[in-house]
Image (tube, rainbow, N blue to C red):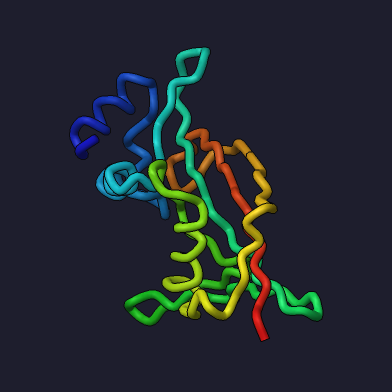
Length: 154
């Protein structure tokens, strides 16, 4: 969807587009960019309503003693900081293998070499949660969280 197509699609599906771009809500342009990049999709549900679907790949990096690596904060390009306290993750594109996305977490989020960890390729968890996304004007969103465990190599 380009911006205009997305706005029309949302309006045609009874989504209040006036909320976008205000009070911390993403703009229609940002939403369109997320869809174009494949970081989210829109699906029609059985009742005709639409839902945003986001597939998140989380990497649980563990030390031998059981400690788990977490992201504590994010520093934006303008220098502002955002508290996170979460497991490192990326949005997984529809066409992307989960383990390719896991390598992206290691290289782009954690900035560590993939040779520093051993992925547990036989143990992936899937947790689904549906809730309204405040960043997307309250749009119902299905979060598919795939959790891959990786062990730090000594």
